[in-house]
Length: 287
Ligand SMILES: [Fe+2]
Ligand SMILES: [Fe+2]
Image 1 (tube, rainbow, N blue to C red):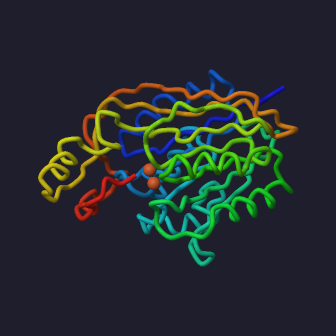
Image 2: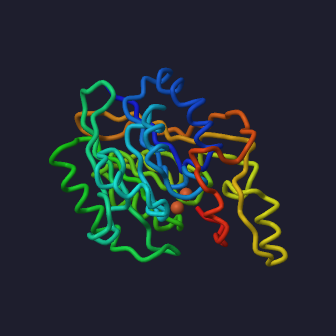
């Protein structure tokens, strides 16, 4: 007997929130999903998350929200990071950072405990402590409470992400990669029972460059003209890894990447994104 767990990739802006709201409740019913983990680091205006958006994600059916390199971009989330038990930031940030790096959540049926840990890669990413020792410490602690354990490895390099899959093989139920916003075709179960994918891909507007308007990014790249990288609105898709896990052993039986399409949104922001002008100075094609 196995239970279904869903892992949703970087939720990007209003378009990402829209396709999640449109498709997630039905998907939960269709597959009797017991737990949903969603990376929310790009949920507010494409970078960061706010308390109001966090609450809405829980209402849509998300059980645990993970973050990444943009975890502290919206300062209004800092108190929630300290108080909420279903919102985690990378565990390998400095100990003095707000929030926590792992949590234990109950499944929707209330029958199983699931440990979730967020980790940040080191290749082409900002400074962080070793994700390898942080994974060891988190999985060791979580194993005392939960047989099902999930790792979100938010990293740039596929090599580093694949290495994390093998590092946690047999110790984590699921290791999924996030951050690059492009889904990979390597979903499967490793030989000791860990479901793995290098990157879930974004949940957001695919008529874009990693969620941002194509024309703005192209103008910046082709002419070196500073641009405001506004969010895109069309071809919304939710990519999510559906994993069957045997709850007693915590090991995965199958893993499949799903793609659900939603409606385009009319405008790139709404009041939940709050002050998109804040991103005028953003010169990176942020992930
Ligand atoms: Fe990221
Ligand atoms: Fe991202």
